[in-house]
Length: 176
Image (cartoon, rainbow, N blue to C red; front, side):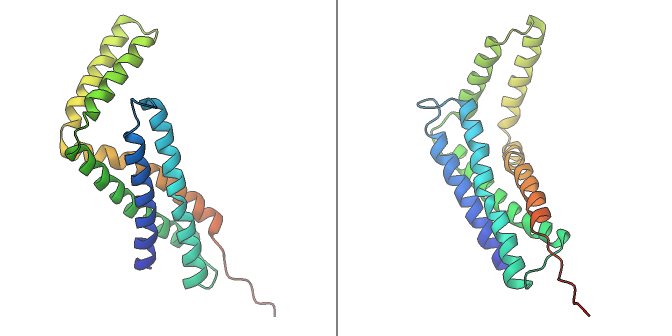
């Protein structure tokens, strides 16, 4: 089971990391951060289809075509954890080694979006303070890791739940 989890986790993590690195290089040139975020979540769902394939493979090849919900969910969750780890490592390496000023560019985008809104001055000041606080917090490597993990893990958790529900299969009853 460990080899299967690593295999499908590495596949999913590599795919989502590749999409992330490719799309981030186009932000500002061809797409904005909002579009990039949508494309990012679409790529996560596509990459995390490896969870579904991994559970099905485990069920069919290792368990003779049967698997309970709990075991299927466990396999999916472990694949998700590996994929999430690969994604986090990729992002942390990128953000800390590239010449990108991602956090300040994103801050500027968020402020521009806020200025387009029809919020009251009081609400705008509160949201600006939140943006400034989030920008400061993001300078902490632990916060970077946690935030990045929380981008992908909930998606993988949902995919794991759905895949486990769809792929659970009890042994056929033996007719007497």
